[in-house]
Amino acid sequence: MCFGDINMIYQGMGWLGTLLFLVSYYLLVIKKWRLSSYAFHISNLLGGILLGINTYVDHSYPAAFINIAWALIALYGMYNDKWRKRGRRHAADNQ
Image 1 (cartoon, rainbow, N blue to C red):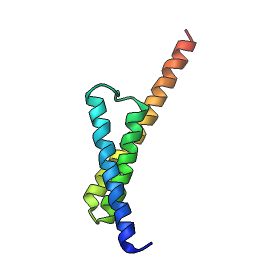
Image 2: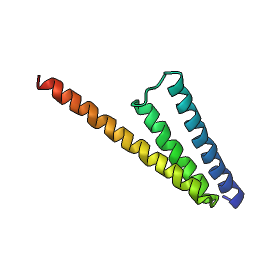
Image 3: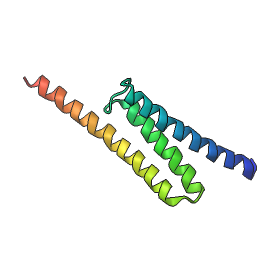
Image 4: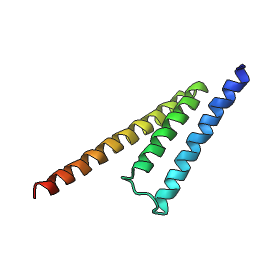
């Protein structure tokens, strides 16, 4: 693989991450997804990781930082939503 090919892969990762962000936000706005939906969190997690890699490779460190932070927030959201759902199930079982 030559250097130009790897650069195209990084660019593709950036575009895919961008598309994931846009589609997930659009689906949220038109109410196809909820803020607590697993698909919304996964889309934001993957988008943040892909854009984080792309911007890091391009030496755009502030953009890389915000994209990785976005991915970590999505990961926290997935964990938090799962924990809340587990708590609701547990409370319903105890009634």
